[in-house]
Image (cartoon, rainbow, N blue to C red; front, top):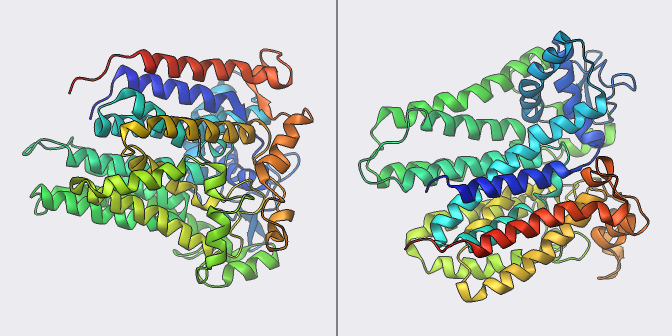
Length: 476
């Protein structure tokens, strides 16, 4: 596997798509960004000042402890935001420039979520090109996953789910990269350290990623065993050292904020109803419920197979991947990741994700769908492309309108008939039909009205498809 001009083009297409759209982060994102701004601007962890109208990051997603307010979210996205924004903020102050709050939010959304997502998409392409030996098929699968699933909308809003997804897939890619090295070849000095750091950051960003981190650790040691490197001390110590850094950040934060090393903002929620719900089971997660598995996959309201029908081809690809014994370990990782997230979320008290067009808790599993998708037989590529185009169009509707759909209908989903409600067509498309477009470059910078504001990004995507269609085949 290697970086190429084609991979760079994939990164560029995805980065341009993600920066083209932007949506206000709402309570969830403001809670994360309030901590970022408190760290950068005030050197503190309390968000008492940033969580105000004047502070610009007003939110109801709050924890409270000893008279102070804190974010109730996992802190990974906030810490990354602070690392990114600190030099920008202090550089601006040095030259006497004050950055407007709206610009802060948009800038951090792209740098802290969009760019990592585009980089993960590039890794998907590199992996798929290696497995398929086809640039076009790899490009189709990459667009299907990066733009045809919830990965797309959640790359243009400052939530933590998509950042966690990008980090997890980055970790998987590093392990697979190790597996493909020639016998006797050693990875770079910082490969193991980087792997541990990436997986630790995923846990710091979203604790549910433990569902994936554990299988990835098993996968890593399997690869070491196959390569006869289990006894190498560095293969153990470097990943451990990298993973300890985010964990120490978490412990340090908890000690400073709550006076104990093991704590969570959800233990100190301001809202008593949410606090009680999160205290049940394991952070609000109870026994899996079959009816919810149905809602999150097959029901038109938010079902994955309806919102991203290209995922149906992943089931087909999984069957053919099963016939490739060499790639059983990777298939097991993908199956454990996707199955684990769907089952876990079926037991969550608010499985639909609150104000969200889709079941956002399962977003971290989505990049792993590229594995079975790339094993769909070549003769079925047109079907993958068609379902992928439908999926991209539907996710585009969401990115162009609104991600934070009112949860009212989803709270009473069991009272609705099968086709009565769809977040995409009952809410998001309605926004566009009535002329309510979310911020995009076409409107804001080019002055294009309504539907015409989407033309530039459609041209970019079409150009990408044409370029990959006309590329010379890879050598066998």
